[in-house]
Image (cartoon, rainbow, N blue to C red; front, side, top):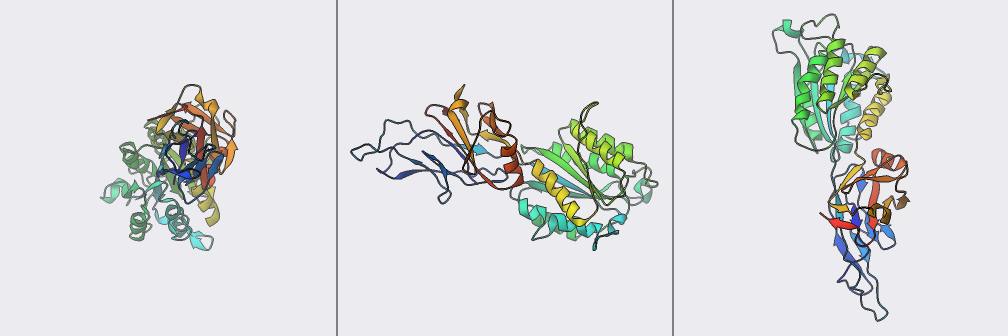
Length: 356
C-alpha cells in the first residue's frame, strides 16, 4: 500500500516522459497504492509519478523545484479478542451454537474478520474460563492466549482449534489478566480489547452465582486508565443491558454527563459478525503520520485526494493538519478508510514540503 505527499515538479527526467519517484509501503489499514501527477493522482502500476514540464525546445525544465516524496508512516491498530470460553457457549445460536458463531465471524477462512484484515490489524486472541474459580484447585482465570501480531491468522486459528468451551466466566479477572499484554506492547497505534461473552460474569472467589459485575466494570476502567479501550459484545441475550452499558462506559472512560459508549448485543450470527466488524473498522486510524513536515501555513497550498477526488481542507468531511507532521481525515473522508479500501495522496506547492 502506497501513499505520497509530493512537491510540484521533478528534475532529471527524459523529455516528455514521467519520472518515477518510487514508492513506499505504508501499512495503513484500508489504503491502497496511489500515483500522483501534475494534474492529480492517477493509478498506473502502483508507482508514484510526476509529469515534468517540457520547454519549447523539447528539454525538461530543470528550474522547477525538486520533487519531495514524503510517505505516510503506518498507524496500525492492535486488537485483542477476549473470548468467553464458558460452558454456556455451546448454547444453540440460530442454526449453530455460540462458540461456532464466534469462530465463523472471526476465523472462517473465506469470510472471517481476522483472515480478511490480518495484514492491516495486529490481532491477538485470549480465551478465558475457570474451573470452579479458586475452589477448583487450578489457577484462575485460565487464559489461553495468542499475542497480537500482523499476519496472525494461522496462530490464532490453531489456538482455537485446540480449545473448546469449558466452565466458568471470570470476566473481570480476565480483562485484568490480558491488559498488560497490550500495555507492554511496544507497537504504536490504538490498542483495544474486544470482549465477547454470553453471560453475566462471575469471579474467581465466587464462581456461582454470577456476581462479578463490579469486578468487570472496574477492570475495564483500569484498562482504560492504562491506554487500552474495552468494547463489549453480548453473544445472545443473557447479559443485561445495564451491565453491558456499564462495561462499555468504563472501557471508554465515559464520565458523568458524557454520552454513553456503544455496546453490542448480537441475537444471531450476522449481528455478531457485524458487531465485530463495526468495532474493528472503527479503530482503523484516520491520522496519517508524514515522513516529513508541512511548512507553517503551507496547508492552504496542499490538496488531499481520496479515491481521486479532492477532499476539502478544514471541512467536517475533509482533512486537517493536526501538527506539521500529521494529517487527519475527518467525517466522510475518515469513513472511507474505516469502511473500505481507498487511495490517498497529497499534492503541495513547491517549498511547502520539508523532508524528514
